[in-house]
Image 1 (spheres, rainbow, N blue to C red):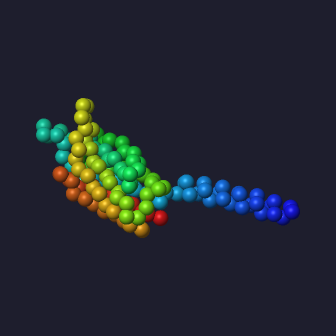
Image 2 (image 1 turned 90 degrees about the vertical axis):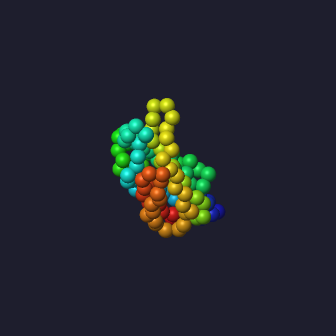
Image 3 (image 1 turned 60 degrees about the horizontal axis):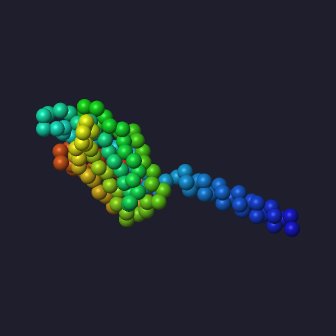
Amino acid sequence: MAVFYDLRLMSLAVLMLASQLDVVSAAVQVYGLYAKDLTGDAAGNHPDPYVKVWCGSSFGGMTEFVRDTDNPSWSAEFNFPQCTAKENLKLQVWDKDLNFDDHLGTCVKQVQYGSFTGSCHLKDGTLFYSYKLK
């Protein structure tokens, strides 16, 4: 009887550990965000850009905004544990303003297995990104 009790305890411990590992590792990870040649407002001001990120219907958050630059880079990484292959990865680039932020463009890419680096052309400028699906 003691052997079965020990096996149940060990099985429970393994299941608990496996569930913790699954929460820590993301199915889709987005990283390496940067942009080139973005434009600001009509008055000629440089943009204060940031990026919002979705995978499927899950909003992953947004980067910090970078002041007065046409060529920003962001260190933020986004993890989507529930996102799977064939769902859409959506990245929106915005220019931070006092009243209303300006939408600079949107990238949509269907997620595939593996690691990828991509780019997409916005209204003015290009967004570069990397993602991996484990």
